[in-house]
Length: 306
Image (cartoon, rainbow, N blue to C red):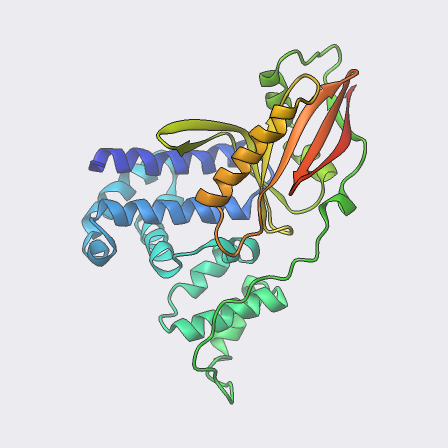
């Protein structure tokens, strides 16, 4: 890609963050960190690879001025440099997205010793400590005071004992404006996206919105997933497809194909297998059909006028 193309792709991630801030959409720590990581990756690529990235400060200075003028100081020289460092320091960002916030990461990035850094990351994961508590641990030299320091400290994987269906309500109620009718799948998608917080609260805990019409390429062909979610308690992606009709056999096959694409191209080794949800319509009711392994588990949605 040319420099301008990298600039435009970075700007697309910035726009996603800024749009969701303005719309007050349920904050997704996963998505925020992932976007910052992707921006860092693109900066490194634009600077001709990781080995040469440290010599690319002029490019960051140039871009930071443009991004700061458009989107504010959140994308100044310091933060763009941090995004680059985030990608260089953490090639796999998945585990961190589930537990740590960007504020945590900012205090971890300056730690050059990998063992020391991983010690503090594990402390955050195991103890769920706040940013202030992390600061205190670092300031008090918690790592240096260990009597027996392991030779190699690896980042631990968060425990996952969460059951989705144990938290999900049935039926799931979605309020719509008086007199409003949903006639197309696009209208249904817009309704769900516009009521994300309500949708998530009834679906269960730990859901974060990734994107709608999420594009994924396979064998030189683009596929678009209606809605892509991530659940940090389940530690997996959720593919959602919308069909404003009764469930057909091919719907399950389509969603399983998308689940497989996510598992092969997006999912990291620390993530659990992707789950699918097919929302269909039957007898004036919307049914959420959960696809997990070979099972289909139906739950009912009800659209009610305010």
